[in-house]
Image (cartoon, rainbow, N blue to C red; front, top):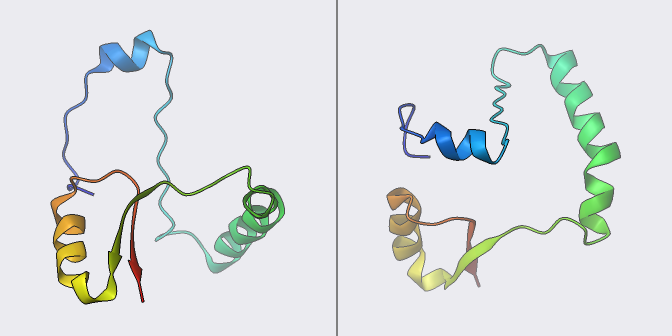
Length: 86
């Protein structure tokens, strides 16, 4: 979220045998995007419904503090979701 340029220590990636992947949907065809949605509905959504996959919530804010929540989001100093509550 901090922009297109970053630095990463590849020693950590290599020592832990991590994989870095990226995918962009902007230039994909509508048919390909629809296929991706179907795959998510068939393979990911059931795990979410079953509670096997849960979002990481960083912080909850009351709606009255939406400006503060937005500042936090813009700072990129969080890991996870920032939620506004009524």
